Image (cartoon, rainbow, N blue to C red):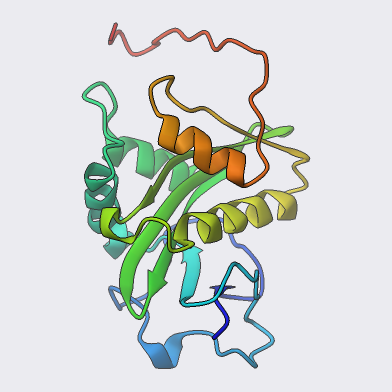
Length: 188
């Protein structure tokens, strides 16, 4: 059996929240293998994941997934981060469903030159099944559709698992340091 990820819709769209009524797409609403709307990104051999921009009704489930993945930090408000990404002109949150179950999510955006991903999460019980690779491919495709030539990711120094994951996808560590300044007064 082929593993594939399908991007729902003819092209990535940006704007307000999708207005779908379902919490997760029903199988009949999913893109079929023969549909010209389906895009196979060929990531392995045992699942199919539908990847699409987040819908408003999925936001709490995505935040729960981020919590389960250990991505939430006390100084970041995930609801505000999610809202800014979805409402911003150069960002979105992409979610992956397998048979109606939320399995992965990633926040993607760009500054006009460099793309960035944040909050890449796969359900903890589903690691090493290709879902992370599939949503990263979708994020890369989203950025290519925006004309962005480069994708950067930041990985915490102590997160060797994430570093290994990105290296397995062909990413390499650049010789740069990241400096930051909190503009919200939160000095953590």
